[in-house]
Image 1: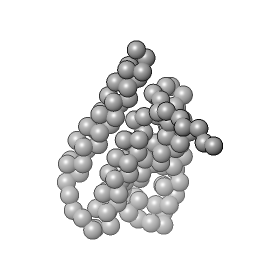
Image 2: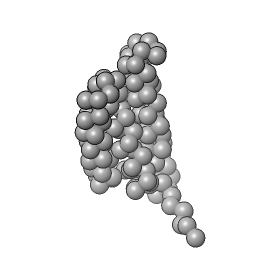
Image 3: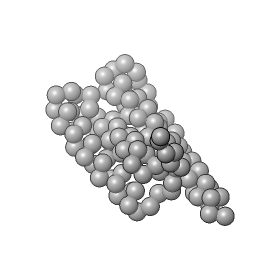
Image 4: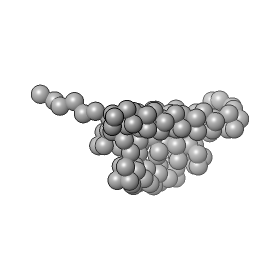
Length: 119
């Protein structure tokens, strides 16, 4: 029987874990960029690495904001990859407000849920 674990809030340990996994993923993606040129777009590799860090953090620590930011970073990274391959054209300035708003909303929801569970 599996035990259901509730989402938790960020702590310095969970943020450190996310950072370590993201940097390792970025290093691997940077090596892959030697052979696959679209990954040379810095923002694509960075966002994909951050998405990998969020998914790993959700699996290990169940950080609530990672449920939102992981897919958000993944979609933004794929959009930058598709732009690098030439499938789509867009102004990068249109992507960043959505990413920043999504990250802000994710941490706000996590903070509100933590405040509600504490009371």
